[in-house]
Image (tube, rainbow, N blue to C red; front, side):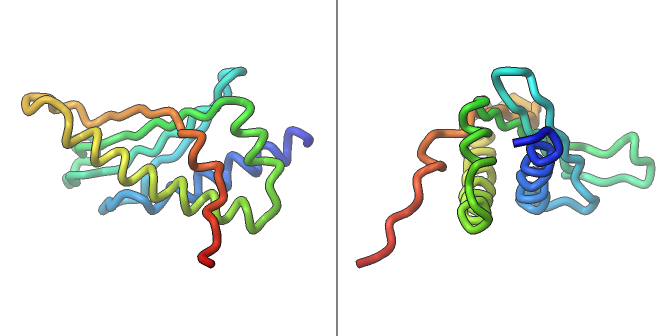
Length: 127
């Protein structure tokens, strides 16, 4: 797969994560390739102020291995769409679970997590 197609696949994942977290302003989404891992980061406003420099933000960084990203990139359109939905659901759940389990005095609103292999498994159709 050429570089342009790989970039398009990264953008698909970014868009899938764009609406996971409620925010009064548009989230900032980015991705970067570390060589062996691909990172996707979503940052959103949780408390907005007239002066945007005072906005409170949270961030969630997801890491995919290069093999996971290549597996995603090789999926057909329907498989990629289903994966995006699983990823978005997992991201929202994981962020909130990690924040709930954080120490009570922890004001840090940044969470990192590795994307689990289980998200790549197609759910079985009901019989």
